[in-house]
Length: 216
Image (cartoon, rainbow, N blue to C red; front, top):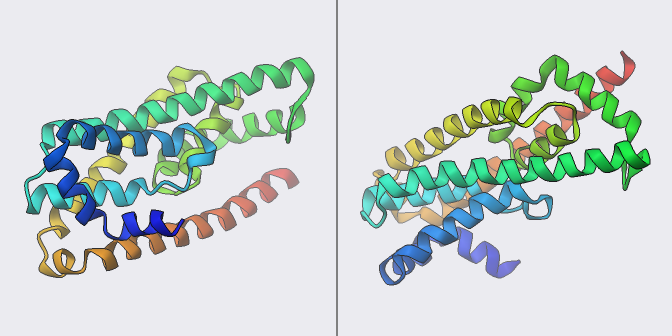
């Protein structure tokens, strides 16, 4: 874990030599990080926000990435990861309907989830892209619900497009600031802290949201 945070805090140091030595593999590695964060629940800890911001900052300042490859790759990797997670949720739904329960998910929970998605599912899918942990859980939960893939894909593509545009733009704009260039580690830590705070606030809102629906 210590080594992991070392890479995140000093991602600018590791990315530049990687791109210079292995340009193809650098794009592939970044794409795998973005894909894996939402494709599998166990990899929800991966910092895709930091990756987008850092890569676009370096692209602007040191010109080590091709924007016509980098940004579409981010978009496609995120949509693909969400789609895989949706498919996993759909697999679990079939098992729930067959057996009445799978692990911690019961058929009663499936019905409640579907009711919630009927009321605010579109907003949840779009906005979850901006909330760590939720961006991993919502595709799975949507797959478990009775929503079909085309319904999910339209809203997911919208959320990913806004998310990728926002963080890439922030990276391009703030990457030009000298403080960011000289204190990149602090900026990365700041993004991680903001990410954790957002996740904590979102979990509190989620608890209130579900309690409200359970009462109804």
